[in-house]
Each structure stands twice: as structure tokens, then as C-alpha cells.
Image (cartoon, rainbow, N blue to C red; front, side):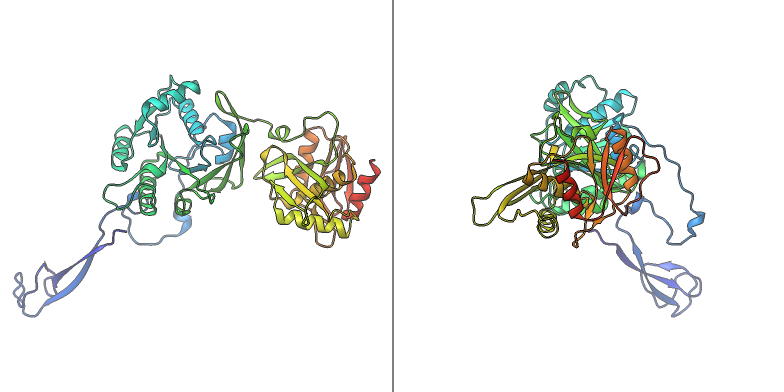
Length: 457
């Protein structure tokens, strides 16, 4: 870190003249013993927030004028939703994810689309040569784009070129390859990452250029090792999902310009990432007849109600200690649900292996899906299939009660939109008035839910 420097100067108390050296008699007014020592601090540079030197004074919040900013649309509905409505001018965005999951594909498609709309864009590639980027653009069918391309890892050269052409959008792919020559350490080290990101942040705030950083994720699931970058940027978005599957989820965990936990759903095709307009249908079962161990529920991701399929398999264990395997759900939550089924639901599955997952690779941390997972386990154990077009919502308490969930009305409206006929909800939940064509069954305790399931046999 570059610290501020200080110097000493001498001021005459009589004539207020300033000198660099002390003297017994003032050279200006010739007064004796009038020199007074004073320390003066001068900043080593002027790279404060926004790169501007401002007076250190306070002012009332009501006197500060907000600047009306118009967001830039990426022409990708799911990407816009994730960012909170589009790209905000001067914002610094960090996109992370596992290797090969689609980070570079998304930014390259976005820049090509926006360049076609007349937006000046600059794509800085630190990992691929110009020929490699060209080959990838041909595969994505965007090779005819007017997007500007620069293959460089030196930050000084990147910023010099950016200041020369003044792009509206700048992409750094990836931030781990960028370095400053005067700093110690190799590219990707903590010092290099922090200082390079700080310089890019200052450039973005000064010029209003939208800057997107692509970051790698380590084995621990952190961007670039330490999480220093997440505190410096305006928006952090992670790619979720298995790169071996066709669907990807882009989730914001921090957003100064919109709601957090918003998600965008994409499908990886031969032409790159395409938006999925109705993601609820992606995560629902395709079979004509419902099968035991499959229950549909609804979760909230930001402002979006998303339907998904909870699956469970209960089988005879060949081990002394039964297995408990969870994919897409919290393993500790699964253990609690199994204990509730044993104690209150009279479902004796203690000696059996239990496998639970969320179809489509979705990860769900919503407690309002507890009841759906419990009925999926009980249904597979008893060989009873859930009736077709039936939805289950509810959180389970440790006393076996079914607790209400947040924004239940939103979830019910999404179920009605997709044509569901029956829904199981907590007895204490708030239900919309006159739900046309929808049968609502209120459940107060887990044993009531298990008894209802047995009646469907």
C-alpha cells in the first residue's frame, strides 16, 4: 500500500511567509525568532474513490443530488434479470464459476450482441490468443462482430488502450492473468489481484465504463482464492450447475444495483448460452405418469418463483451404517426430515439407505421445501406415487408441525399459472382469495401429510 508522504516547512508568525529551511531571522520581514515549524502531508497519488480529490467536509444527505442513470440492456433477458435490470454505468461486475461452465461464452456473446447495437466494447483476453478467440466466436456465430479485441496481461497497457478508445463496456478475461509491473508477486497473487482490481474500479467510476471481470473459482469454491475481490466490486455473480449438463444457473450473491439472490437460467447449446424463458418447466418431470419418490415443490430465487422436482430413493442397506446421500439439498436438513418421519410419521426407514436430490442440478436452500422432500421419501418407501399436477409447500418444525413459508401467495400463483390442480400448504399460511381451478389442502402436522399420501394409494 502506498502511504502519504510528509514534509516540514517553516512559517513566519509576523508576515506568514513560508520557507523550506529554518532561520533565526525572517528573510522577508527580518523579524527575529518568528519562524514556526509546520508538518504538511502530501498524498503519494490521487487515486481515491473515483480518483478525485475532494474536500474533507460533510454535507446533509438531502443536499446530495442523485444522478439519473439509464441501464444498458444486454439483449439477454436472463442476464438482465440477474443484474437487476441491465448494466448500470460505472459498475464493476465480477463473474465467477468453475472452468468450462460458460463464463467466457456469456461475456463474448453479450459483447457481440451489444456491439451490433452500436455500443463500443473492448474484450481483453489474458488467457487466449486472438486466433483462439476468433475460433470461439466462429463457433458461437458472432465472428462478424465489431467488438474490439485486445490480448494483453499488462494492466498499464490495458488501461492506456481503454482510455484511448473510451469503450462503454470493458471485459477482463480473466482478472487472474492481469498484473502491474511495479508490484511484487506473480499474476493472480493477493497483492496483484487487489491492486489491479482497485485500478480498474477507479477507471470505471471515473469514466462511467461498465467493467466486467471474469474470475476463476478454486477447489474451495472461492473466486481467485481469497475473497478480497467480492468486497471491492459492485456485483458478484456465480455460475452454478454441472458443466456436463446443459443447464446453467447464474446467481447474484451481491448487487449494489438490484436485489441479491436473483438467478438467470441458461441452456448450453452448440451456439452458446441461450436464455430459458420458463425455467420451471426445465426442472419438472417429463414422465407421463407420476412415480413414487417424486414430488414437485416451489422455491423463491430472488423475485422469481421456481418450481422443481424433489426426488428420493429408499433402498435396503448392505452396510452396518445406512447411507444418507443428498444432492442439491442440505445433508443436515435431510437428517432432520428423516428423524421427523420416524418419530411422527410412523415411517420406519432407519435401517435403509436414503438418497435425495433435486432434479436438473438445482441447489435449494429453502426450508419451505421440507414437506415435499419428506413426502418424496415416504412415497418411495411405501411405493405410493404423488397424484399428477399436485404441488407441496411447507416447512417442518422439530415438533412435527408444518410451518408457514414466506410469500406463499407468489408460489401458489406460479402453480396456478402452470396448470396445477391441487396444492398442499401449511394450515397457517396466507392463501389468495378465490384460487380458480385449484384445490387447496391445508396440512398442520407431518402425520397428516403422511395419512393424506396413504389415501392416494
